[in-house]
Amino acid sequence: MHPALSVIFFTVTSGAGYGLFILLALAHVFGIGDPLTVGEFYTAGILSLVMITAGLLSSTFHLANPKNAWRAVMRFRTSWLSREGVFAIAFYPFAVLYMLGFYINGLELGVPCILFALIGALIALITVFTTGMIYGSLKTIPQWSTSLTPANYILLGLASGATFFTAIRALAGSEVGTIAALAVALVAIAAIGKVIYYFWIGRESITINTATGFTRAVVRLLDTGHTCDTFLNREFGHTIDCAKVGLLRGVVYLLAFALPIILLAMIATQNGGSGLALLAAISIYLGTGVERWLFFAEAKHVVNLYHGRQSC
Amino acid sequence: MKLGLVIDLDVCVGCHGCAVACKQWNTSGTTGPLTDTDAYGAEPSGVWFNRIRSYEVGDYPHNKTVHFPMSCMHCEDAACVTVCPTGASWKRQEDGIVLVDQDKCMGCNLCSWACPYGARELDPASGTMKKCTLCIDRIYDERLPVEERQPACVLTCPAHARHFGDFDDPESDVSRLTRERSGYALMPEMGYKPTNKYLPPRQKRTVDTSDVARGGVRDKLKAWVNRVVAR
Ligand code: SF4
Ligand code: SF4
Ligand code: SF4
Image (cartoon, rainbow over all chains, first blue to last red; front, side):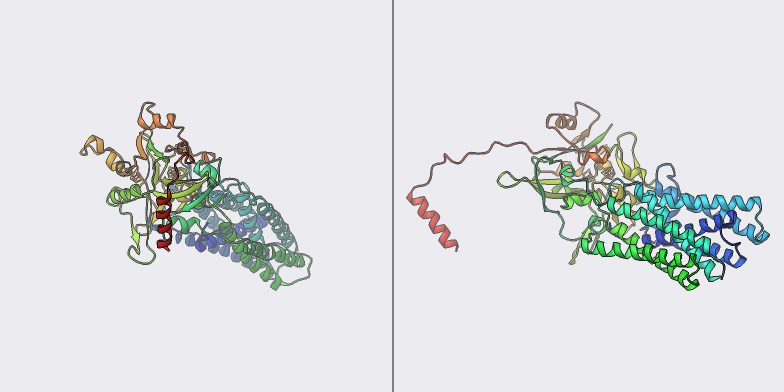
């Protein structure tokens, strides 16, 4: 699949933004770690909303006819993309009400504020799930058609959100031991999910034989029927060689998982300062970007079988 | 009704006539134009509802060239329709034709991702998704003579490799052909239940040449001269 930068930026940035909001709401409501300061609350809250909004706006650059984008909420009953749109919109009132409640009451948590925070966090989680399901529900792309896809989206969103949250609190000079330890756990779980995914997509199950119906003989492409690029080639024809996949997976393991885990663990054990936390956040953000690029680049749409691929 | 096409792989000669006729008819039809970019330049590209690929099946000497036209299969379980967030993609209840409402499409490409058969192409000029309409603006046009109320690709095919009809009617041409010639659907494991069916190439008797009389001295001389002169 063609890795479109607008979609990569969207899924990575808004995923981290939703993760950050979830962590903020949970830490606030359940009092995880040291009590929040007002500054931390606003920084985390506003940053999460900015990231989510920037991501959603970027996703509209991917549309060829954005003037009809408002119609995307119409097919809620069948389309995961539509559901994503609906939940993304439904998230805003709760997030804003939560922040507003904070503005009015300060750090004192009232019942409505707790409700807005928890419902907002739940909708944020569902939104990331729906994003994953857009890809996970496509049977035409065997590498995506697995429940590991939405799981990875959620785990990576939470892991980056937790890392961002740790960085914000550390930069504000708070005690972040507990929250950093939580972040280490979330990044480690995300890493396990991704390793399983990379093993799982190794198999190729659909062949040129069932695609053409000639199941008792070798089938080779003689002619694609076109002389220059087509929509199908540009959208689905993207290929990547094994060496590059190996290299980039290494980058993902390093930037998205290993480095953040080491840095966060150092912070959790009081061995590092806020600079390391910032580094961890930058590292996981870039690492997730590479991870998302690979997610698209490694996906093989079955239409490639008609263009001569033997299996997908 | 369940309208669709039967494509006879035994007789298709790979002339691309159906693709050209389709482009000609539909570019001024309901979902036209089928925009071309750089049409006279070095990298011509454009929207097609119908594409023909050619394959070699089997190994020499038991190999065969098969030409393979593909357009929308008007699937019964069309995920291209269910994934569409705007409701632009829809499947008609009365005859099963899958269409894209050009006024509603936002050009997100998701339906083309959901189609296993490469039947949908985005028009860069309008920013909307386009696909085979089963020539809905021909088959129901009562101003056309009855025999012309067929898709452009079917009418034009010089080899009669394409047939159009109602699969719900067991006595229709397409049902009969599918039954008698073991018509099959492509990539059935996807579970889309394509309406269009493909007729496999027939097994042909091999012509034995071992008993053909070998030429006399004159023929051999002629053959030798031909070879030498060609060089
Ligand atoms: S062939 Fe593709 S575009 Fe046509 S109905 Fe089936 S899935 Fe949809
Ligand atoms: S490109 Fe258009 S028809 Fe296809 S899924 Fe998106 S909105 Fe629907
Ligand atoms: S039925 Fe009509 S639109 Fe479809 S491939 Fe044939 S000519 Fe094109």
